[in-house]
Image (cartoon, rainbow, N blue to C red):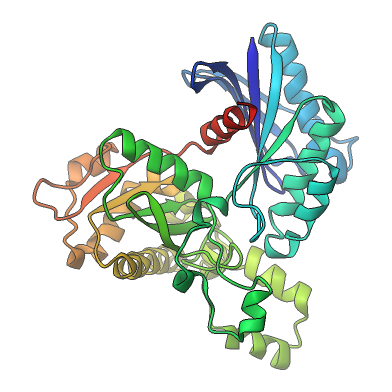
Length: 393
């Protein structure tokens, strides 16, 4: 059986999937989710129906941190060889966060391309190094199998110039300091789903609300603007990332608190967001919603307030809004968060059906709502597989 393997990794987690190649669409065989890989790794494996096939604690105590991603892939491929029957792996399709200005389409990655992609590590320090490490690991394991990079920035590559620009000297803009946008594979998948529901040409705001948070304005299927810009820090507060911040705060921290670049990077990416506002209670929204501490409530309120503000801003960028879509972990699973964001956005004509929202229906708006509100699970792995098939073709 011909198949495609997808890789979607971060610093301490790894999501993989195996798809068989059938006709024009990839067909899911197995999902692999490995968490806490730098600590006590846990591997969860499920099939296409969502049935859990394995839930294992992996013993990586003898493997240093630099070798953990390779060890995870070793485990996954060993499981596939034992449990999936005969497979002819035709390609491996990787999610890579940043493609810069140079790469706006999937890319066949060899040694030269890998070095070019390292240039973007400063723009995505939480993700890009591990994305590239996983490509190297797959090259080591399966050197004969083509490796494709699919970029989170490519969906936004055609954003209007006015949406890409910062008000900086032109020489800096010409040097690539501009807004790129992220979560593009997720938005691309949602747009495909909307197209299949005959709702792909509406003025749409999609909220990718997970531990990483962004929203995107999509008009007639194209990205108009996104809340993430030069890096994956901009926008509403996230699990541990601060979101948008007055740059003057950073100047103050350097001058008055004597913080260097490394300390500021740690602050912005890992110590802020919901975790920071809650006083360290949690970077997980489910835990904050369950907490009776006022600091947890403040983190939730700040998040829903800022998301609602962004919905208004993105609607202005499109000169209207006809559809709102919630996706990703929080957006798909938290009726309370959806309800509060929609309550704050009622001025746009958004009205939701409480029962439909609590049930997690695909459409949660009322019949009188001027804006259609949908809940659509995202599937970045499916997009990776589809791009892999397209590249092979």
